[in-house]
Image 1 (cartoon, rainbow, N blue to C red):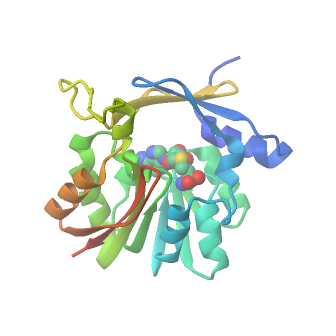
Image 2: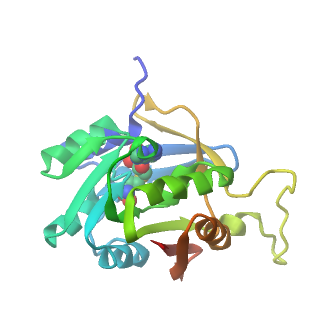
Image 3: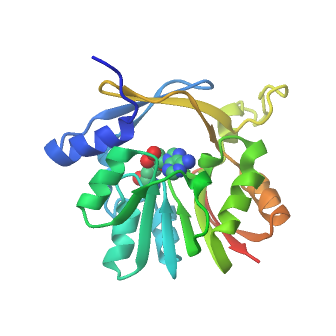
Length: 235
Ligand code: SAH
């Protein structure tokens, strides 16, 4: 069987078709394999982490859901009568979203230009799209170019410091590595696999530092189970 490269999108189409929950395997250079269950991508508003529910309640104006996946956040906002559109690099995800009546297109966030929004949603560790800490300012500058003045980024991330903390609370992270939140991942599902890609887990202090440098105010709205929700407002 030849390999295709849209595991997430294929998992979304399969779940839509047969309703069977299946694992998307996520391999990482820094820790054991993890899985994302395809059903999780279809979580209802009630099943969303509170961080995501709060992000939705703070969304306003013209909204862009970046890396929309199965579009659960965008659908909820649309049902509330809000003006929301979706982008994703996964063609199968986008075909699913379009079929379900959402305004959606295949696009890479970093390629967008000449568009303006009031809210950029980057949920489920969405700021990870930055790839590495060294690309975070660049990512925020790109987001800034897509925002009206006073517009905001709502993003969540994990501070994964706990992965590196021993029982005494000491850090055993290798100080020679650039930043403990710089990960490399590969996703696999049923004959589909991505190339290895960079994904960032930024702690809030690092995010705030980059936000302030690039012309945003930064506020931690919530912090729960090593996950936080940040709101960055374009000044
Ligand atoms: N927001 C959804 C899906 C999160 S998974 C949810 O919370 O359930 C992350 C999504 O981001 C994937 O669908 C992936 O295809 C998309 N993605 C990754 N890099 C991207 C990029 N540069 N531009 C747009 N979408 C991207």
